[in-house]
Length: 411
Image 1 (cartoon, rainbow, N blue to C red):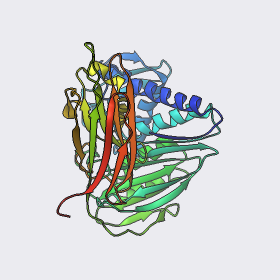
Image 2 (image 1 turned 60 degrees about the vertical axis):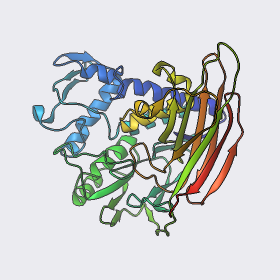
Image 3 (image 1 turned 90 degrees about the vertical axis):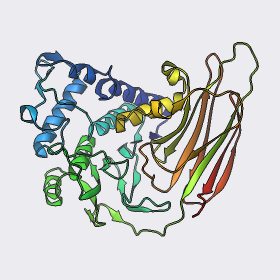
């Protein structure tokens, strides 16, 4: 997450945004069993009083399902003619109607970002809130948004378009940026004609819904749908290499390709004497320029219940889980380590094994010990700048650490 504020009380604004994100995740998350949405899906054929937020999001899914002919939906079509719930707004109830698995993806993240930005605006005159590449710009703030080439996985590909944003939201969807996760809910097939769709719109949920729909609909259907939504700008990147955009997007040329890099992280947990010493929990992860956690490189811990003590990693991973829906802790974690020197490598790929886009990233090393102290080290790196070494000043739990950006052997 990246948050920029025009405010005399930035801490209040940031706290308000983070609290709102956490609150809405507790309501709308499809991946947390304890969320209100997950609890509601375990009911069947009975009206259940739900929060205004859940009622609103379910209503928006009904609206966009109709407007897109089923291209935007919380479930695959089939049962009940694709009707998975019935809403009674007068009584504030929602009735779950089908056994089809439901996932609140597409524009739900845009809904959350917009609500969080509204919360921050109570303490600011301008807000730019970016979560995983989707963003909202409110008040006096303006932002130049750059769109990466979804077909180029090389290390120095420049953005292919940019747009100046004020008082609008921007959302991007596709099967290249963070792996193949877009599915046509009408057929279950993965769309093959559009690599990515980026939409700017005055309403955040419009931008999110249209970005999803445009990766599924034909180009002609997308144009017709955009024409019905006031203030929309969009850019479609075709898998065959073509670009279709409205005048609001400025197209940019591509650059030459450099050789691939890898990032080596060296760290040494501190030696702390004492009978009651407990080994620290340690997380090493990478975030992109939008503060989205693209890769957890290492996660050393014993019990899941204490993972929130790794405050930086845990908050970022909950945001990633809300955006992507895949739980990764069990696949990357291992037991805590004793004092000593350790080396880990990041191969330039995200958690799904897809090469990340070129540009700037931040490597984080975090350590937390029960009844002990806390360290958070960070270093920005640029994958387009070539090999470079970065020594990091240690703390109490991490005696020393370093980042080594290296050219991969043989390239």
